[in-house]
Structures are given as structure tokens and as C-alpha cells.
Image: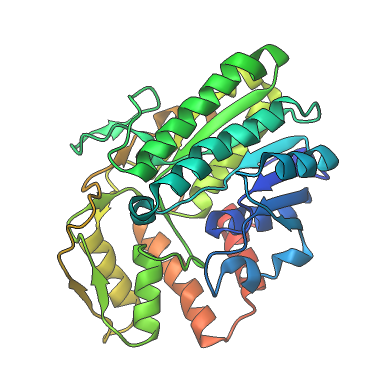
Length: 353
């Protein structure tokens, strides 16, 4: 499948969370497609951050904003009058959700309510994509690939907040958007990795910080299995879905999984070994027990629906994913590449351009 360039040209798109890790990659890709992007988000949570490295403020109509603030968000969206709304803003970290569950629920649930309530009052909006998480499922931690119709839940505040956001989005679609002919899709991806993520308590950013400083990487759960995937794989799925949603809002509304191919899920230990071998012979990791917070040991996604109806599936296997990711960070830390050009090149390589 290929993206339709004519579909995206000059489209007005409003993105919440546009300056996060995923949001920055998506915003750059949308810019390259010729869209008019408007973004609202809190300031980037880390230094460094991908948004600043790519200097995306020069390419996006960006404003700082909190999705918990209904009135300010409403003002921004009503001025922009976008055709497409992509909701990515969230409190994205499991461990932080234990430390501040109220903020997590306010942001991930009520923030989603605010975004969708404003959208239902904005006549220009024709398509909506809500990004939630693979962690929205009621995870029984067995060798089972979750499909879109499985029960939602969540052991921790983050996971349950994402399951709740899913339910909110579905309710808003059935209550308000369906009868207006407006499409609303919900996208759930796996553990996304790629260049430019510096979030805390994530394996790739933690590894890059440690190895670049010539320190050992400390990990918590070496035997936990995750559906690892390259950043561009789910983003490509999101873009395909928006195209289809605009053509046929009824058939393409609802939840969609965008996970890696079955059988490519691997343990944290496997990932650490691969990262270390790609980085240098001296790179090393150490496992330290940390039972303070529960984190799932096994989570798998079934993406057959996206394969059947969108002709989408992950392009990169895990080895290529790790090679592309390590190459990005290596170029960044060695300061021997224009990172904007290099990031665009990774997008074009993915598309086969």
C-alpha cells in the first residue's frame, strides 16, 4: 500500500501531543506530505527531545496547551477549523501513573473527553483518530494475541486510563459522530522504538543514555516480553487508516491494532543484548530486581484486521528496527549528521523513495 499524496496536500490537521516522540515523527511525516499542521501540547518533557532537534517549530503552527483546559483547547480548534483531528496527547508512562494517578486519569480520560467534546461541536472536522495503547486490554499475561474485540481493562493507572479512553472514544462515536457521518478510529500499537525518544523508564532511551555515557544499563524485568516495533510502522498504519476513514467513515471507524508480525515479540533481555552488540563491545547491561510497581510480563497484539482491511503489516523485522534505531542515536551522539535530513531519509527509506 502507498499513501495518496493528493489526499494529504494542504489538508488542515490538528494534532494534540504533536511534540512528543511519536508526535514529532508523525508531524514531520505530515509536513513532508504537504499538510497544514496545527499542534497543541505541553512543552517537551525531556532535554534533549526530538521536536527541538528537528526544529519542527519552523514547520508547524504550534502552541503550548494542556488538554485538561477545555476552554483554551476549544478556542484553538475553533480558530483552526481542521478537517482531521489526531489525538495523541497523554501521560504516557506506566511508572509515572503509579506516582501520580490523578494526573494520569485527568489527562488520559478527561483530556480525551475534552478533545472529543470540542470535536463534536466543530463542523469542519470530518475524521478523528484517537491514539490509545496496547495496554488498554485486560491483560491475562498468557501466550495470547489480543484482538480488537477483546475486553478492555488495565492493572495499573496508566493501562486502565487507556482502556477508559478507548471506551470514551467509542461512546462519543456512537452517541454523536456516527449520525453525522464523521469517522472516528482508535489506534492501538505495541512498544514503539526508534530514534529520538528520551523518555525515562523506557528501554531504548535508558540504553542510549547509559551507553553514550559509557555506563552500564540497569534494567528491571529482563524476561518481560513485548511487541516491539519501529516507529514508522504504526504511523504508516495510522495514515492509511485516516485515508480510508475519510472515504468510508462507517466501515473504518472503531478500534484497530497496529502491532508487529506474530512471532517477532521478544524479551527485554533479547533487546538489551542486541542493542549492546550494535552499540559497542564494551556496552553492558545489569538486571536489578524492582518489585515496587507491577508491570506486565507478557503482552501480544493481533493485527489481522489491519492486514485484511488496510493491507497493512509491519515492514521491518526486529533486527532492522534495532539497526535503524541505533543508527539514529549513533549519528546524533557523534554529531556527524544533519538529524532533520537523516530523519527524513529514514522516512523515505521506509517508503522506498
